[in-house]
Each structure stands twice: as C-alpha cells, then as structure tokens.
Length: 187
Image (tube, rainbow, N blue to C red; front, side, top):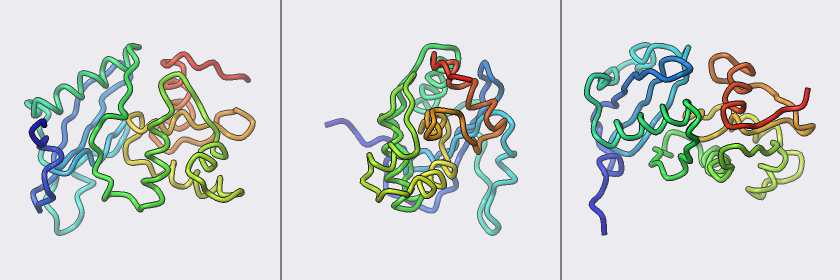
C-alpha cells in the first residue's frame, strides 16, 4: 500500500497554496490544499490574492518551488498543452469545494478522454439525471473549478456545436483546447 499523498491528508485549516507556470497558451495557475486540488486557472484568470476569502489567509505562492507532486502535475499540464495529450482523471480533486450534484457531473466529465466530446444531454444521461436536465448539467459544467483538468471544454451543444465556456477567453479558448486534442468541429 502506498503512503498517503500530501494532497490526500485529512483536512486541516492550513492555508491553500498555488503555483503559476508558463504553458504554450499562456500562464496557468494551479491551487491545492492538503485535501487535493482546489482550482485550476487558464490564462487570463484573476490574481490568486484577489480570490482570498475575507477573514481567510491568502493562498501561499509556491511558484518558485512547488512540491514534487505538484511540479510533476505542472509538467503534465505543460505537455498536454504542447500536444502530448494527458488524461487527468487520476488526480486528487478536493470535491468538498463543489456540491454533490456538481461533483457527480464533474466526475462524469473525467470519463471523456482527450480528443472526444459529448453533449450536455448525453452527460445528463450518463449520471442518470432526468430528461430535460441539460440546463442544470450546463450550470454544473460552467461552475467547474478545474477547467482542462476536468474536461468541461469537451462538452458541446445538442447539435454538436460549440456553446458557452466560462473560462477566460470563452468559446475561443474552448475551440483552441479542442483543436489541441485533434477535435474537428463543423461550422
């Protein structure tokens, strides 16, 4: 049995941490705490200090020297964004950051591999949500704190067309991420 990861230790009140790093599409940010990854930010996201909750300490900047496990993940993200596709479904996410419904939706997203897509309706069916719940699924996908890592960019509208994308850059970013994965979209 392997030793517990520092990202899977029991929750404490220690501050969260983050690291900024360059990629082929710009500077990304990765946030974590002792329970797992808490957020991921694509280029153009708000400054981490601005995201601190009032009364809580600002996240600690580990950009210069991230922990080994985080440095390895950063390298994987950089490889993915350089065209060496990665599957991030093995990561330890801090699911306490999202509602149970959103966690179900986001966990289902992890099964959509690089270069593949699905629709909101198909995602609803995958989790056993009732017919007509595509809008609720869309809300959960749009609130994804881990874009790219939990591949919300792989979800298309019912006609197979690009729909909104809540990460910085919107649909242009979504299209770029899909193109990196070899997904050809119809006009």
